[in-house]
Length: 146
Image (cartoon, rainbow, N blue to C red):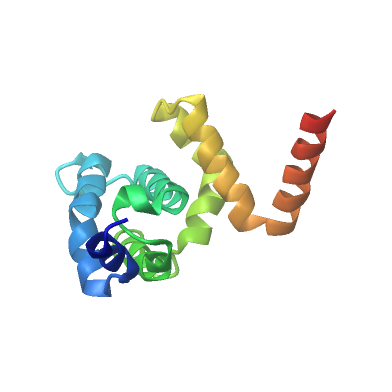
């Protein structure tokens, strides 16, 4: 890797840089969640924000950030959630919604494909029940070995 590229990838982005970089994404998610002029469908907004977070965590480099930038981006995502959904909203509550009957209904109404649903449910499992997720992954590994 050339020295210039190595240097560029070694720097963590500041909160302002991340906010500037992700602002168009946040605006797009708000627009896609808007059903009548200024009314935002909160369930759809949660779905899109969960999708954003899952994709960025899985492939930060594809989003133009480093893994070390994730905590700062997390704070920006939560700030966006609070602004749209309200105080007390965080990523855990978003993934709790994804795991609920209402979340299932929203995913069906949004016509998500099975891979997309599986991704969101995988992240819900990981975030809401880390120990259960670990046991589940061990069972899957064991099944694959047999």
